[in-house]
Image 1: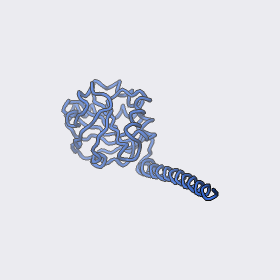
Image 2 (image 1 turned 60 degrees about the horizontal axis):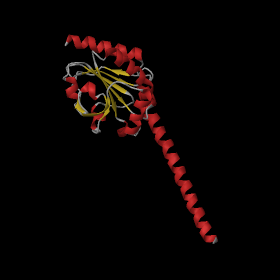
Image 3 (image 1 turned 60 degrees about the vertical axis):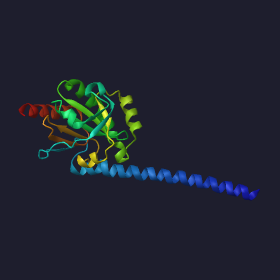
Image 4 (image 1 turned 90 degrees about the vertical axis):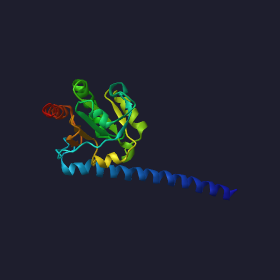
Length: 209
């Protein structure tokens, strides 16, 4: 009888050890997230204002998008970026994740800007959280519902997109001209004022093409 209790106690201790190790793993992963997605972008510029890049003109790499919402705007459940560009409007792509606090913070501002400019631009939120261990697609859908976001949002199952667009911090916003060329890349949080400035500049450049 004593041996059975000892064995049972040992099993309980093993369960407690497993829970402890899982907790430690979460702490380690969160620390890595802070190092890579908060402090690293900060080393290039203030994470609150972001890091703006004006790359040499290059075509935005094409990829397949599976929409969570916005099918009535973009025309289908699945659509390629090249099809969006072919609509003739500038495209604003916001790379985000369901477990990314700065992404959550800026999304209401993106929604307001979308409401103001939706007749002149295409806006797309692209969830890449599963590729960066920053939340599942279910987490992303829940966040959209919680914040009542209205602009088109989807995901991609092509992990190559993260490296193709040089995503080194979250969130990242790519502004694409009607020609398909990348006009601006912004790494970090964007508030409404700055996003409006970037969109208006993109529109001005687009008129010159």
